[in-house]
Length: 610
Image 1: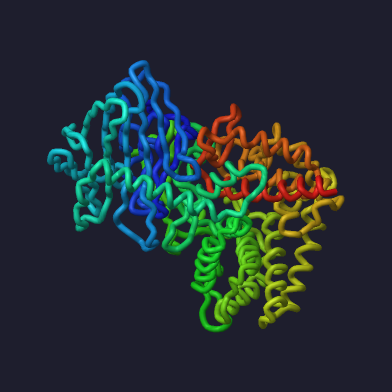
Image 2: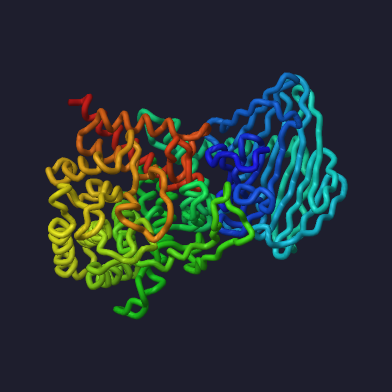
């Protein structure tokens, strides 16, 4: 067992309320429960010695490991090949079809020998509350119960378990065709113990999970050139969405570094208004209207929470991120006892960026609501009044410095992207008001929209670079502006936009991979550097396709797909030698892959039609 396997060396399983990472060595080294944003139960990926893990793999460490998903599902299969035999571990969490918050979550791990004889070893070493809470072990035969403050976990196996201090071990020898299973269940302290599992019952649950995911994927209307990658991205987005509310988290993990050994280690297990809003377009493009509708309902609730009376706004109408249930409290703390992934310290839980002012989020939120209108997701009268009051507030608030889209901790500035997305908010609001004949101060909104456009083109334009730049008066390029043609701020083939795209090619693009910006040229308050940002690479493909630069667009897209891991997943960034960096897998990357694929498909189809 490697102390710290590569970030990309994992598959993701989940039950639509939480998720776990399983390495290609058969180790669960990340699992939080009962929700994505709960304290960890297994976190060896952040501290091998203190984090806890659950290993189930052949004793023979000389095996060759291969990992794949059962087709079009979230059932992960890890294969081990050795001279004595071939074994498989299949990992999955039964999807929660009721979509109500639950304290009980089940991770099922089955093993079987495919050829020859395979001796499997089990080690289960939970470490509750990020490794801070001690637990008691009660072991009776093939059932181990781990009790910690606020949480209980049961491990039940179809073979004998043995104590190892507070933890358990076990071994099972299987001949070809034989199957065994281990089921790990977390629950509230007063939850009833689950019934002992049987191999037959586990196999039945496996096929139920396969049927669930394959039925869900069949709803997709994608018929383009990259069905495997698009379907995998769609399943990943679904896995990262908290079913009771429809709110997606940015990633399944926390603390994984943007630079190994550096300090850019953040907690991404929350719902960013920006990321989640852009996912609406991706979901609608694939035909997943129920998921899009549920999230827009969640977003509408957030818009109304800080509004009171008829006019007054209590603070900013939206926070940039929330917990999956809408809770705005995301207090950040440093887990000082964790060494971090390969020494990447500090490890942070919570996210202080929740208190930042990022004015672009109103553009993404209104973009989501405007895109959702195509399937009849209209806000009711009170919902519309909340939306209108939000735009009235923005009309007074858009022209001020903020922290910007990348959540820099170097102070506020006049970021161009924040202005572009404020323009988008007014543009979408005006279209919604006209289409549905809703009461609105359209004259005020129109004046604000037009003023933003003029200001951006005058103050955001850099003559030397012949491009729109990151902030007014600067000369730093910023890849967030690649969204400009998608939201309609500039037409995709206008001279000013093509010139901006050329400038990004010169400064931000490295062999088709795209950096967000240059931290050395635009200090962001943090030490170190970062890799190319995978979201931005897919936005670059989208922008190239819209600009009718189809050859470089398709080549860049195909090259980017080679950076996916062995089961089609992407982290946040790509490092200098092609390694995946940052939290994993990242929803923003996968939704932008879907968006880029759709745009590129449509552009290529038009080319052949012409």
